Length: 122
Image (cartoon, rainbow, N blue to C red; front, side):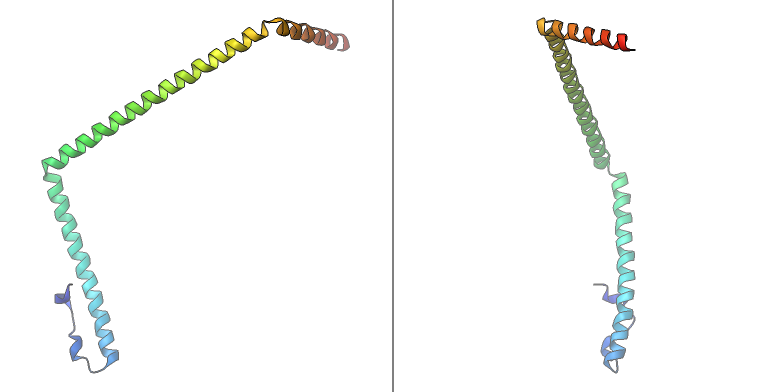
């Protein structure tokens, strides 16, 4: 609880106001000591982590897993794109085949007649 860094003994305060001021100063000192202790622990953990071979192995494993997952995702995306492209090509062929039917021929004749009328006007 960091009581060892207290600057004042609040039991010796003559009144409540002085005791609260002492507590406030003690709280500031405790917070500073707590912050310094946390920094030391973090530095020690970083030091140990840096030199632990298990951590390096784990990081390498995680990196491999991520790259494999990214490769799988890219492969799946390419496969979906290829399937989509194939479906669109098939759809275009079907439309073109439908256009080659009698209805398509009739539409072609109508369009030719329309374009001839446009040329006559223009």
